[in-house]
Image 1: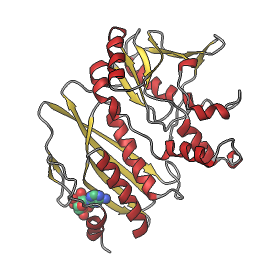
Image 2: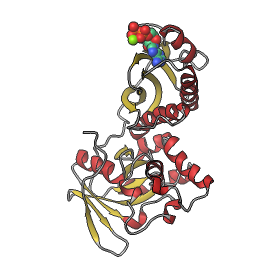
Image 3: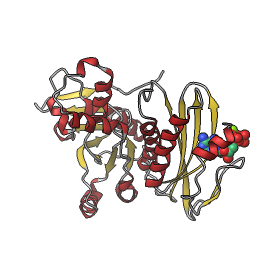
Image 4: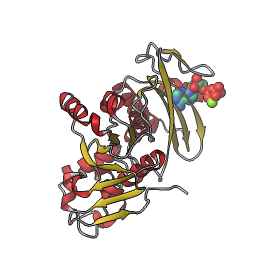
Length: 322
Ligand code: ADP
Ligand code: MG
């Protein structure tokens, strides 16, 4: 099978073509129509075998996750995801692998009504690079900068399960955990199929002063908001929503998966106090539950009020490739 028939068989799908795709797969470049009075947002994420996923994973799950982590970057900016391109590096031409992978890819794209508009295929160690393009009404994107002292800090859902699942997969001693196989599958699903929070996009545009998606861990990602906004943050430990199953394995010595573990792809954002009441009633109206976990302060750095009242300074953290 040559490269062109491979693209045709696995990647070229016309059924879901959006009206705004003027030129899709097949030419030297794609051409899309950005809506009037909108700004284009572009983001790239690469997933490398044995760094971001294991080769034992179902290629279907790998594809879903690759698309979703990219969608999450759009959600973090309050942008509407629209188009993706895919650069795929494969060690060999494995039809079964490609079938599962492209199934996950197209299914996930369809869920968000997105279109695959181009890409590239090369030979080498398995690597998946997706570039996502989205848009937002001019002036309405939400950035990491913009948080001000007094703004309240929110997260969009409970944290820690994905990071715990990573540990579950990589530590043999985790084999005899106090979880049923159904519960283990649920935890694993949090890692394999994160749910990018595009349901918050309209609310963020209207109410948030800054936002980020939690890929590296709450403390690391909140730190990015603080650095870009030149502020600090004060967290209330007790108010951080942790995945309920983690209570069963939490000991005084276990890592705080919710605070330092990544991969949940919930959003962390800040709401100015004068907008908070309207924000909360909008949440109720849309049946969305968000959790207030702290406050932005002018004093730099991250501190946290522990359950016993102690105030602790959190060290800079987060995953670094180099
Ligand atoms: P070029 O030689 O100009 O780089 P290619 O032969 O790499 O073109 O690709 C031909 C067409 O197929 C292009 O429109 C390209 O965007 C698309 N394409 C290549 N690989 C992929 C892929 N993995 N997924 C989607 N489209 C792809
Ligand atoms: Mg090419």
